[in-house]
Each structure stands twice: as structure tokens, then as C-alpha cells.
Image (spheres, rainbow, N blue to C red):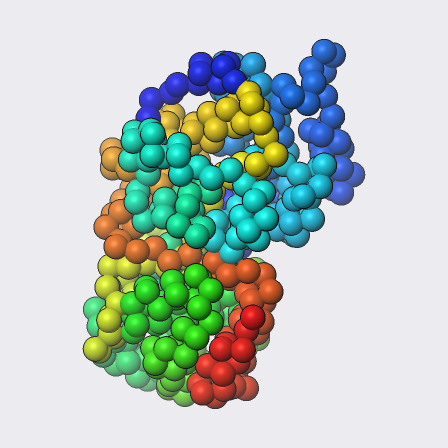
Length: 444
């Protein structure tokens, strides 16, 4: 991590859309946008300000503090615009390319910004990382790589990591005399074990297709390796025809037919805490979900989170090419900078996003309950309010050879939406594995 160096600005990283975002009225949002777009006060011009957009949720306090610190030492002042999570991406896409576009903005990397990169709307930060080794080495490599588009860096990690983790109910496992799975053979045996116990093996919120996506992501990663989806993300639609994709779809069908998700998963939701409650109440033994599930359970089922919530990695599959240490999910969220900025505004924006690599910023994330994406943060993470879980998560990501961004964020919107529909149809047996592959190959 870097130590604080804000003075140079004078010269010139499930916040996740699946967390419950704090709400504000449309009028309040409009007022904040108007305030941010206008001058900040008497004698202050647009050239002396940076409009910074962030997804509004419980983590926003860290970015508020960052803006306050930055403004104490910078002639160009940052103005934070907190945009409600619902529809954030639509608002962001609508604003880009207009006079109301933000100067610095929160995003998920990958497909969420690829269209902006194609239209030369973002600052290529590669030169900054090349000339400032300390800045680059401040972040876990697999996290930083997720901010790349077309081989160049367009994002700086600015929030906590959010890998997908296989959670399990310790009490349910103990009653069944079972252990968490270390292999795919173990998974299949556990399905039978818990069915006999009258417990659904895996909680699944089938009304929300993104929860099913997590299964497809991990299975393809373990079967074919992270390279298969990387080809897809790079625009090679033929990669959907890779044998590993068909094997993944066949494995999903096998899980559904075995009763891995029970009989009612199609009507279970996540946003209203349906799947998480079934899991916490012992109606389901395991739950494949983003790392925010821990905070969700801590808030809604605190006794379960403290005494009975366990976690482990997604196992490898027989003859799979993927590294079992690789992870999928949302590596983090990123700051990106608009290419419309010039001169001292651009210099100030670069200095602002660099604050996310500093010690105090990582400490703020930990104090907020997040696990930072900065390297050499073991001591900080040990001070987390749930140290065992935080250290496990940090080590998991730090040691991962690859961290695949959630596909619905990695792919352009015109592909991500029909992809989720196809995945839901696969789980609902409305598409055969072969039909699923054909449907994915047809995406443009």
C-alpha cells in the first residue's frame, strides 16, 4: 500500500448491485446532480471541481471520507454524487457522452465500461501504473487485472473484494455426520446424504438468474479453465462452442435432475432474503453466494452467522483443466476517469483515484466491514470484526491465479441480459444443454 501523498494534486474496486442500497428520493438525487454539475460556490468554476459518482450504499461513507481528505490538499475539489443503486448502470450509461457525464465514476470494470473504452471516453491508466511501481504493487494482481479492457488498465480498485464462496450450515452438517466437500465426488454424495435427511442440498434463488450464473461460472472455470471465458470476454463468440461449455451445461442439468436445489428453487428469491433464510433455518445445507452473504446473515440471522455459518472453496471436477484456487465473482469495484478532463483537472482526478491505494483508505474499508484489495494487508484484515472470515477471504483472493469477473458485468449489456435468460431456461429445463450452447453461440 502507499502512504498518503495528496499534495501533488495542487499541481494540476452482490457497493455491489446485489446489496440493499440506501434509497433517496428522485428529487434529492436531482438536487445533488444539479449541485455537482454547477459551481461549488462563489468564484469556483467547473475547472476547479471534479464530479465523482458513486453507487450509494453502506460503503459510501469510505468514499465520503476520501473526498474530504482529498479536498484538504487539492486546489481542484472533488464533489461526491451518491447515485441510488437501483438503475445505477442505466444512469451512468445515459450520462456518458453528454455534458452531465461524471469526471470520475464507480463501475465494475469489464463489460460495464467496454463500450466507453471503444468510444475513447476513458483515460488509459496504463502509463500511470507503468511509471509508478508502488501504485501498481499496492493491489492484489488478480484484482487489478480485472480492471483491464483490451489489455489496458481503465480502473483503480476502490472497494472491498467480493468473491463467490461456498457457504455451509455447520449444524446441518453435524446432524448428518457430514464434512464440507473437497471434491466433486463429495458434492454428489452430499446431495444424496441431505436428501435422505429431508434437507435441500443447496439453497438457490431461482427467481434471480444471477444466482444461477454463479454455478455456471465456477463450473466452466473448473472444467475448462479461466481461459475459456476470457476468450468469450475478448469477443470470440466461437468460444461458447468450447466442449467445456457443453460439459458445464450437462453438469447443471445433472444437478437439477439429482435434486441438488430441491423442488421449489424456481420460486425462491434472494433480494427478499428467501434463499438465505432457508439456509440459515437449516432447510438447506449449502449456499453458493457472494461474500456479502456473511454480512447478510450477520444482519438478519446473527446467531446463525456467529455459531453455525461455515465456508469453503468450490471443488475441482474430474479431469477439469481449471485451477481449484481460481475464483469468480466481483473482484471489486473500480474508479474510472473521463477522457474529457484535461490539464489540472485530469491530474487531480488521477491523484484522487490513487487515494484508494493508501493505507488509511484500506483501514477505512476494514473499519466498514469490507476486505480490502490492497496487497500486504494481512495485519489490517486481522483487525476485521470477523477476522477468521476476513482472513480466509483475503487469502483466497490473494492466492488465486485468476479472478473471473461476474459474466453479467464482464460482457456488454446486449449480451449479458439474454445470457441470464438462457441460464435461467437451462436451470428450468426449458433448454437442453445442447440448445443452451446454441443459444449462447448466437449472442452478438
